[in-house]
Image (cartoon, rainbow, N blue to C red; front, side, top):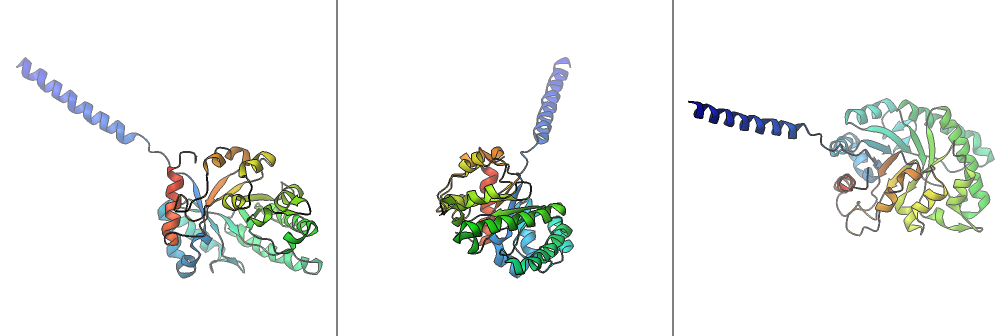
Length: 290
């Protein structure tokens, strides 16, 4: 009897040990998903055809932030600010940033431009947006340093209005800003002549590379100025034809002042929806992305 009892006890101990080990394994926390945003220009045709369904797909993929590219006349993709915010919230995403803007006005058009911005800022505040980003300059900003200075003054004025509403204002680059104009690099001139308290920069990592410059050099020269990044490659991140080496850039992220990273895809090896999903998967699996 004692032998049988000991065997039973041993078996019971083994079974309990297996259950305990299994329980411990099941309780081990999985690595949390990284907070990655998406610029909705990446899926612009999908947004035109079915904005609600597209937002649902993006949220299901695991994107946590969206940056709009569809503001007009106080609405986002034809929806009132509260409606579009609610759509993002319902799909687990923060409507965090938005691309919009106007070309620098002349003196006669200044008041009308500022009135446009008042309406724009009010709509973004109602939607809970934290960043408004102007993604362009017209030819004025590329023809002379006097023209670039006009944009600097303009951006400072718009940034002051945004600050009053609790929103940060910024500028998004392409490659043309890295050309020399009258002995100065346009992008450097913008950085030096805008007030850091009023104007931040959303650095497009692909376009600065195409422009022949190194993002890390800019982090060192202008620390803390680049609060948002567009993480972009030739097509979807990590896809065929990739030209970007993101590792050294992300290793210097703290120096840049970046607060959020936002995927943008403009060329595709797949459908836009598939491309933005593959881009998210690439960043989630990249060890250097925190």
